[in-house]
Length: 193
Image 1: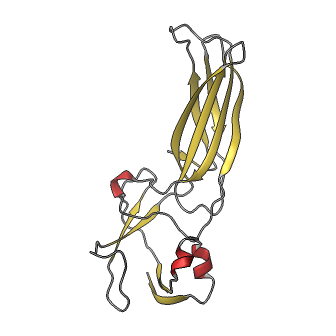
Image 2: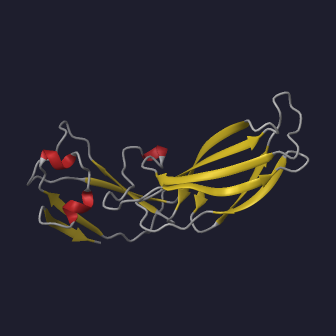
Image 3: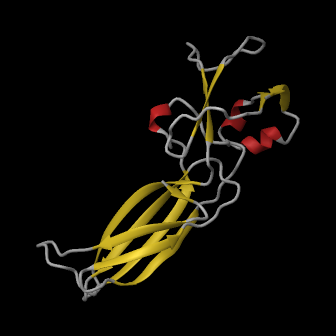
């Protein structure tokens, strides 16, 4: 896991297919940062994303544009950009290119979780036989608090707000949750600590 606003150490190492060192070759590393809803595999049925927040992906941030050493390596200490308004855990898609002298390149892409927060709260509804929730009936929510590695945390004081959304089927396709929370189609139902 990487952390926004912090530095991360990387080692880039490259070899030719037959195992020889890729000495003194040009290399580039770029990163795209986007939201990541399935951040905690042990809690797939929990939602850890704030759907009211819109996160515009950070695209093609250059992390390195330089040359490998005589061993075909370079050690890097790279700043991970700070972000605001993150809906939850993020994902860095890191693309590395190592260029042959003729201009062709080999490419490697890797996804790495990026944490803008020190903890995350997940919510899951108890399973029902229907694909909807009935109004005016009790509904049970299960909550969990985890650290950026997905390990459960205890002792967190949480506050919550529950809203009743007045749905119209055509709005569902837009998935603009902030629209519902900021207009009259939302009724506050309960809040507490």
